[in-house]
Amino acid sequence: DVILSVHDLHATVDGNEILKGLNFAVKAGEIHAIMGLNGSGKSTFSKVLAGHPDYEVTSGEIHFQGQDLLALEPHERATNGLFLAFQYPLEIPGVSNRDFLRVAYNSHLKAKGQAEIDVFDFDDLIEEKLDVVKMDASFLDRSVNEGFSGGEKKRNEILQMALLEPRLSILDETDSGLDIDALKTVASGVNQLATPDNAIVLITHYQRLLNYIVPDYVHVMADGQIIRTGGKDLAAALEAQGYEWLLAEATEVA
Ligand code: ADP
Ligand code: MG
Ligand code: MG
Image (cartoon, rainbow, N blue to C red; front, side, top):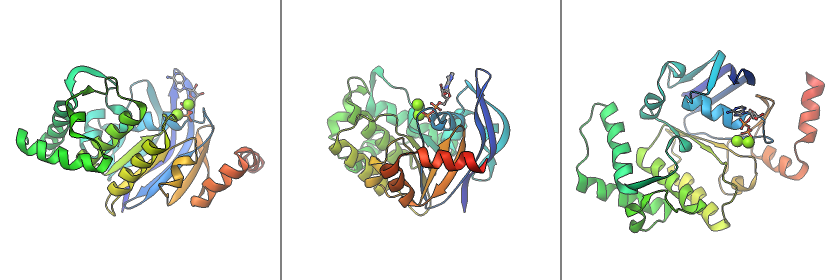
């Protein structure tokens, strides 16, 4: 059951080609990690998936649950079950996290043709989801992300994920500043949310997170392509030996 398939994807930013023929596929029940040096195009790939307007797809195809993803507006991608943590605004002063999450949840219900959730039912639902990220209910009454620590912002992302139950979650691990407790909580949340029906893609420069979330596949990106795919051992090899050997091998083959 293929959830996402990407075929020969090329994309530009400001006229510069960043993705140069990327191929990638994810099936239900899988956890993938995409690793690579800074500047290899990992975040560009996640932004293309989200439909960020600065990123132009010049050729290639992306199918999500059998649909042409590129034909969908960003909000349609989200309500169809694609979750990208950074799609959500960083800080929204004056809007409580509870109201923000309820609006997001209702927009997903609406897209499915369902009625809005009752405010009290929502409170029960969201408090149950708080357990996934071990957050206190007082967290819901603060303004969205305002004054949140790096760890709290990450937990909030996982809370959004727990609530929206996406088919595919892309977590771009740009925040390397998590302390070990926050990292473990985030990892535990992700592990609780992984089911045989959904899939998760972790984008990370660091191997650290993969000590707590064990991926089925590890991909290495370099210069806008995936140059190597392996199992979890590949992440361990990168940790021990760095990226240079892989990049050298890739150059020989090319
Ligand atoms: P990674 O996430 O692997 O570190 P990025 O996707 O962020 O890599 O960046 C890949 C390349 O694309 C880099 O050379 C970066 O400078 C360039 N790039 C990314 N976003 C933009 C942008 N908005 N404008 C210009 N160049 C960009
Ligand atoms: Mg970068
Ligand atoms: Mg990045």
